[in-house]
Image (cartoon, rainbow, N blue to C red):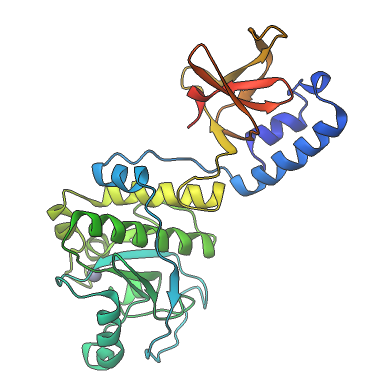
Amino acid sequence: MLCIACATLINGIYKGENIITKKRLFSFFILLFSIILTANHAQTVKANSKINDYIIQNKIQPAQIQNQEGTFSVWQGYRYGVGQPEGIVVHETSEANVTAQQFTDRFNSQWPTLETYVHAFVDNNQILNIHNTDYTVWGAGPTANARYIQVELCRVDSYDAFAHSLANDAYYIAEKLIQYNMPDVAGQTVLSHAQVSNLWHETKHQDPTYYFSTWGYDMDQFNALIATYYNNLKTYGNVNEDNPNIIKVRNSNGLAVPIVGFNGDGSLHDITSPELANDSVWYTDQSKEVNGVTYRRIATNEWVAETYKI
Ligand SMILES: [Zn+2]
């Protein structure tokens, strides 16, 4: 897929060539191209939530997804086939202080009598994938089972643990959406069990609505966290957008982001053409501060003010 910035470059609107040597330009293109190929039209969604802010500002690092294949022995493809899930259902276990491992052990020994099984259990420390997500489980009624991956969030009893458990859950969901090349669309590819119950009335469960509310949290906030992780994973390869050399820019007051160049005496001049496309992603190798503004270098003598970084 071609990003705006890339199309702009190819269309020759970017006119910085005269100040970049050909060799530099070539390596610059290669770099930019590799960044853009991974960017894939990602957007950073600002999570409008205190807990999301806590997770993002503290750069909470999710646990690794552990594949711990369980005992569930029903190998059934989704309605469109094996390896064709259409989204993910978000559950919570409704039971206090039982860890992901404890739930896994219980389900592995009791699923034939409980007549329920899920793909994964997540708590504040672990992400346990217990059934290959190419195949269905029994989590939310026949219609949803035939369509969706099912993940259970375990209850925890502290704010920090809750934040970690959300980070793990959002990471698992974002990774699964990406693994199966699904878009992240709240209510379509990511549904709460409550939404599933209300759509098809095959179950009455309303999780995770109540549990989230006890923390002042809701599905909208969780969807914002999932979107942030999904987009960061696609753009930067990790949930926390922590490649300091890669920036994405946007001018909220205009169609493009202005850039500047520095004169020999250290003063700066505006470069009116080119400008950078909104939401384009750039590799920067230097920064400098002038009059209290930090500028990030994107080409030999082309700099963008960090205030445009999103
Ligand atoms: Zn549920």
